[in-house]
Picture 1 (tube, one colour):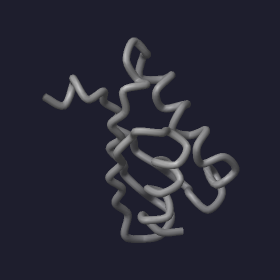
Picture 2: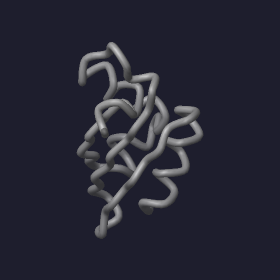
Picture 3: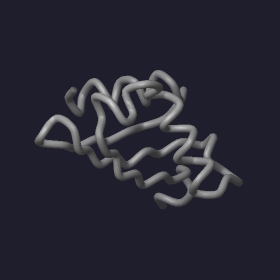
Picture 4: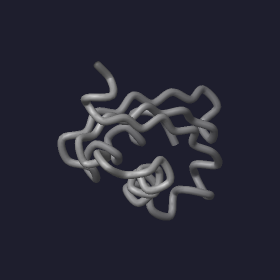
Length: 76
């Protein structure tokens, strides 16, 4: 697994999102995801939205994913 593939999966699964993904060892990754659909949602709900874009890869090919989830307004 690589960071670019994860970025593509997240951005495809969450339309109008922007994701930055890092991870050097191929199993542990960090991602910052900016998406308007996160508005009004608690962090756990936001994380579940991102995990849903990755499906069965979580806990398999992706051993760990540290997330920072923000709305566009929270970035400013």
